[in-house]
Image (cartoon, rainbow, N blue to C red; front, side, top):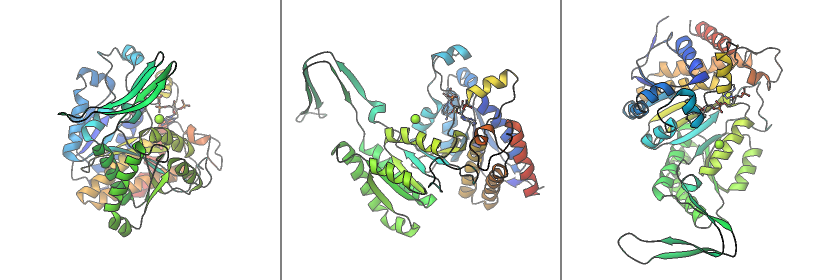
Length: 403
Ligand code: NAP
Ligand code: MG
C-alpha cells in the first residue's frame, strides 16, 4: 500500500495515564502505517513537564502557532495529591490553560453520533456543538464575605483623572457576601468572531443566549457585541444558508433540548462550563466528545474532551484488562489531519481522515464497542471489547478499506 503524504508537519502533544496508552496504540496502529507524516513531537506527560519546568508546554503551543495544526492527548492538571503521587517540583498550571492563553482561542466541543448509541434526549439527531467563552465572569472574580452592617459599592476610577463612578451594590444590615466580576470588549468580540467563523465553516446555525432581561448592562453588553458582529457577517450567513439566533438563556436551554440539534450554541463562560457537561452526558459518553481550540488567526488544536481516565489507568497498572473508549482520541487525530489536509490543499489526506472516521463509526455500529457504550447501546450487545481489541478491530477494517 502506498503511503499518503502529509505536506506540512503535524504538532503532536503526548499526555498522561490511560489516555497516553490509547494514544500510542492509535498512532502506531491507525496513523503511522498509512501516512508519510512528519510529526513534531512534544511530550506533555507530567514527568517531562516537570523535568523541563513546563517549558515543553509553551514550546508545543508555539509550534502550533508556527505550523497551524496540533493534536493533543489528555494531560494531568496537578493538584496537591498529584504533586505527591508523581514527586513533582511544583503544582504546574493546567497545560490546556497555558496553550489557550498562548493561542488566545475559543474551545468548541462536538459530540460524535452513532446510530446504535441513542442520546438521552430522543429528539437529538445532529450534533449540538458548544462554544464556550473562556475569559472572565466568575472565573476571574473577586469575592468578599462581609461580617456585618455596612455599604458595598462598585467604584470605577478612570486612568489619568476624570470623575469616579460609584454604584451602590447593597446596604448590608447583617452578615453577607459580595462578588465583583468583569469582562472586556476585546475578549467578547473575539469570542463572537470565533463562533461566527466556526458556524460558517461547519455550516450550522449560531445560537447565543444571555439573561439580558435581568442583567441589562452586563449581559446586555454581550448581546450587543454579538449582534454587531453577526450583523457584519450577514451576507456570509446568507451565502452559507445559516442564521444567527439570539434567545434568552432559559429559552435557549428549552429550545436546545426540544430541537434535533445541528447548531453551534455559543455560551457565556459559566453557561458553557455547565451546559457542555449536560450535552456530553446527553449524547452518551465522554468517550464520544471531541474538542477543538480555534485561535482568532486560524490555528487549530484538536483533542478528546475527556481527561486521562485515571481509574482505568490504576486498573491497567494492576495488570487488569481495561475497556477505555478511544473514539474521541481517534477523532482528535482525524480532525487534525483533515484540517491539515484542508490547509495544505491535499484532498487525499482529508479523505483518509474521513475514511478512518467512517470505519470507527461502522465498528461501533456493527456491535464492537467498549464498556461505556455497551451499557447504553441499542440494540443491546452481549459483550464489550477491551481497550486494545477495539483499536485492533478498527485497524483491521481500515486496512481492508484502504487496500
Ligand atoms: P476523566 O479522565 O474525564 O474520567 C472520568 C470518568 O469518566 C472515568 O473514570 C470514566 O468513568 C469516564 N470516562 C472518561 N473518559 C472515558 C473514556 N475514554 N472511556 C471510558 N470511560 C471514560 O476524568 P478524571 O479521571 O476525573 O481526571 C483524570 C485526570 O484528567 C485529572 O488529572 C485531570 O486533571 C485530567 N483532565 C485532563 C483534561 C485534558 O487534558 N483535556 C480534561 C479533563 C481532565 P468510569 O470510571 O465510570 O469508567
Ligand atoms: Mg464543567
